[in-house]
Image (cartoon, rainbow, N blue to C red; front, side, top):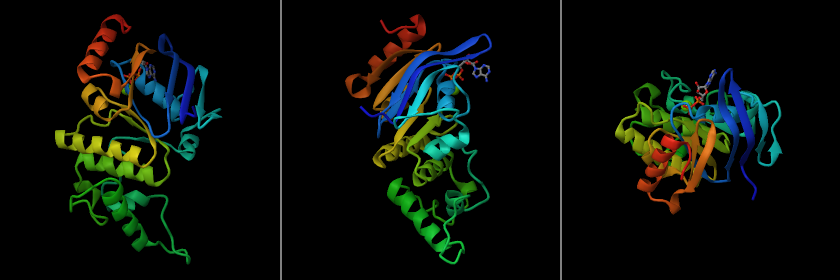
Length: 251
Ligand SMILES: Nc1ncnc2c1ncn2[C@@H]1O[C@H](COP(=O)(O)OP(=O)(O)O)[C@@H](O)[C@H]1O
Ligand SMILES: [Mg+2]
């Protein structure tokens, strides 16, 4: 099996806190992996190692079979690892098409900005790839007016367009309304359909269950178990997570 991402025996300590202990974690191509666990379980630390924000104390990370050494945030992005942060990444006062192409503008052969093409591509991405139907979400719309869910969608679209192969969402539904959350969960489906992989972290087991192919449960820095969502009912998963929180293991 060729994994998109393979983390082997990852440990990370912050002073007295052993945030991760011998964690093994993989993501297959075109797989959405849900990462769950209580506050402080180590979820964010694990993904920050993938995005080059933290260095592990020990263990190895492989991306598409290649061992990653001295990973930095810039290098991770270059490799196609993108984290979608809540709203932060968008320029509120700018139009949608400018936000999509910010820093990576398309130009004509003469070196001028190819505005027409960027708008066309934006339209195609929003409607085609992500199923945006709202007339308010047009290439010339100013992003400020978008809902939180729509802004997240824009960030995901941008990551997809620029060849991210692994898209990481850390608590993306935090602060979103119900309808925005539903929209966001649809976007995650779009990631998979585009042939990319995703790590999805959320407090809400229901959200994770509805988008993930596989769920990995972290507890106090260790992997407590994992399930294929097709093999387990939502209430079973919730039961197991409750048991993990109580005892630190699944049975
Ligand atoms: N930069 C840091 N400095 C010190 N402790 C940290 C730091 N980042 C995380 N931790 C600690 O590591 C543990 C795991 O944190 P985190 O990965 O953020 O958990 P989660 O995302 O699952 O809530 C927690 O005990 C947290 O307090
Ligand atoms: Mg976290």
